[in-house]
Length: 422
Image 1: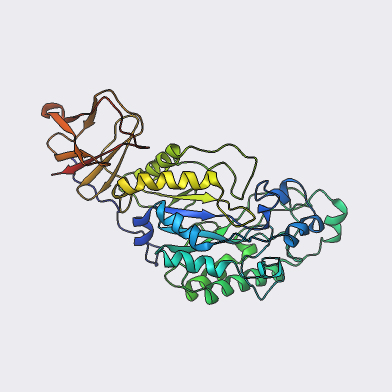
Image 2: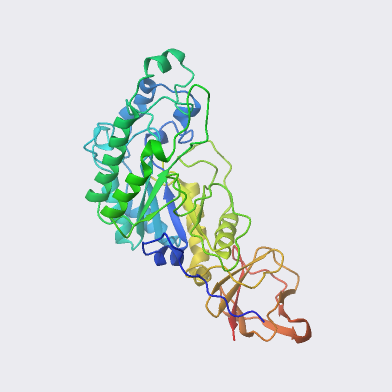
């Protein structure tokens, strides 16, 4: 018989920070917010529509989030069961949410007339959440960032020629200087989420960028010197950090191995506010994605793109509230849990924390579900949402424990059976 599996194997070499909170909390909020909320056509709108700097300026000139209430954002995240957040300090368009001394392209110079990052971080900390910063390595606004195959004006040959001699070294000093500002002026930052490296890209007339371009080794060293506890993701092109699969769920994770990772997912396919995108995932699917990740030893970082007035739109709020209702009854099947050594039946996932094994039923079976390898291993079983007993019988010679389930599926997004192991 297999031994009871620990939820978290030993932390691998290379993580000198405290990763316990990340492994325990499992569920975080991603926030993509900036002046791209005004066009409301995806956060890459400047790239997709080849918008010039001059035309894009109108969004800067009209950014006035008069309904912004960071405490409401933080309270909703907490209610949804999230335990950490990551917010965009700067996205690829170069707009800064904070009062940077290194640029005028920042929130205090818009009609908002204030630093929007500081009160946001303070509000989430007050709710007991860990805080992280997304920071773009790319910057389409900076006058020395090279025009390459991702630049919004890449198809303008005259523009490309005019800006052919841009100095990447000057931009890198700006990049490092802004990171230093954030890590010295905004309190404890638990997680630094850089985005992104693309060294394999080659357009013929320009190439992508990676560790040498960002001076990633030097940048990482500075980050760790300023805040030694901090966690870093894997997008500096250094071959280390928390893995961040984006918009897909990893197929599997190998039992007994340890890799810090989080699936970064949107509610509707867009990161920034996208008014007309109707590809909204139902709350039940979002919960299944959370369960799937934890069952494979990973986290879910679920995104919201607030509106230009500074609110979560109703579709986002409704989903967060529905997830929160599920988490209220099922959070102990998520927090502190990880991958189990037992193999779950079809259409199910296991999460485990010590001697508690949680069976998440992604599809409701008729009356019975058969659990391989658990005969003689279970002391008690109950539905988690109401602590009602689940009876079972065993076929010891086959090593199978069979749960006797009600015909009616419980009215929860994903039913969970809590198994108390001997």
